[in-house]
Length: 272
Image (tube, rainbow, N blue to C red; front, side, top):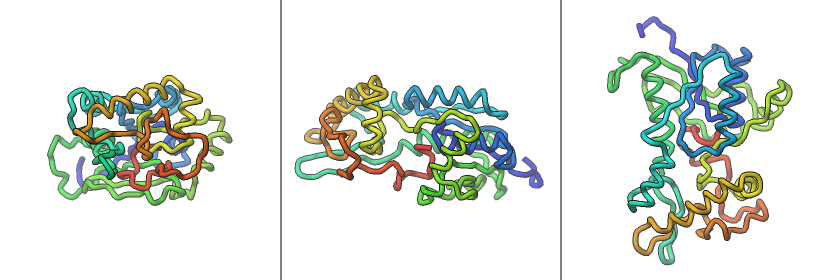
């Protein structure tokens, strides 16, 4: 890219409510300029309804969706950690004796942020480790709505910037859903790995009732996580440090679970 060229515009697409709304608004010219592509960072851990909606978007959008993934995906990384007893890098909950905590979180950076940045680098013609010489070469639009404004983060790279079109339009999540309905689009699913420890009671209950295959997969992985911890340390998907199949999911009362807004979510690239 020459110094006088305009930055390219790309979307971060999670195939959930906000990012799908943002992509379809761009397709209709309600968000400009038209992006050159949407990038879907595939952890290989999304439930089937997300991949199904992604297929719908591939037909509906006038720009390409580029699918990227780190290594064999996050799911394979977790399975390897369980079988080999190695570091997992997902913020599962840990209980050791009378103390509890949360595992170190690297999944968002390694399986979302880094693959997207690598793809943007390719799109603008930067070679690996090539410096940008202070030139802003791309704008990455991220699907964060006004009710999640605390998730906004600046880019950590000096050669592309973040943009938040839904916040520019003062749109909240429910308004995204209404826009989808008004424009005749099917309602998107929530986008998150089926084993994400940030699910709240409502999300676990919805998975249990509407997607029992994935809920059983989560139960099975939750059990096997306790085989992977250091001696004396037990690992759980739920913050109560109770096996997932024994957790009380009957109400949405705050019983220690984190809420869906991902207040600690890194750079807003998960769950949208």
